[in-house]
Length: 322
Image (cartoon, rainbow, N blue to C red; front, side, top):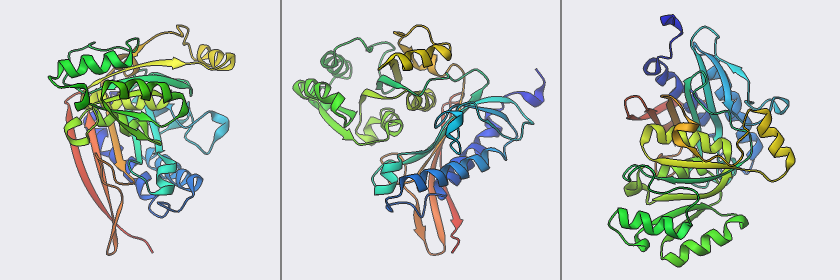
């Protein structure tokens, strides 16, 4: 392979951080304003502009929708200058549009990048997910275990009681039975209204975030993005696509997904070393939200590389335009 087209993750990583920073900065005047669409559009436009400045031949494999839903960054969209390595890109220009509109915690701008054919091209469907942190033996739990058994197994493995564990779940009617079963074990539950990429990332650092486990059904694209983060931060993630009708089943088959019952591990979702960047829009346990100071606006970004396991926290101050 020509050295000019190799995926040089170290050189590309700072450029990736600029992408999420720009998307977050574009949201500064949308936080708490109740305009979800306006916030999302601003983040999309800023992220696309910054991506097109990078010397990559990039393809969006996890995006905001299909081609006919532009101006979203859609699945299959080509980004970058075209003069560089072929890369897969998974992104969410604003993970938590409603969180941003309501100024609620854990809204992020998120992106991951890996070599071509390294990130699963997941359909925009639901996915059943289970995520835990890095301090457990591989395969200690799996998706087909009863939730109560998962709690008891992880409590025993960590030398704690079930009531010492906290499970994060999206607050949706579909999770009512799951919530009830977990509460019967004595474990506590942190319900969130949106933002399961951030929630799964929280599992990687339970002592800081208070989250030990993530369970439930959410978006498949968000599952792949979260897998990219855990690939860098450490942890385990398992996912299985959830089909509600024949249309969704056929959609998966057109994307070469034929084993409809397959349980994907983290390494199935992200098959090579990747880089990952997230910038806080609203305050959260992992990242601070955008902050205004006299003449400046400040962002907080985490930049991750799976090859080295490195985590870089960066604060960026940008002159505030009137």
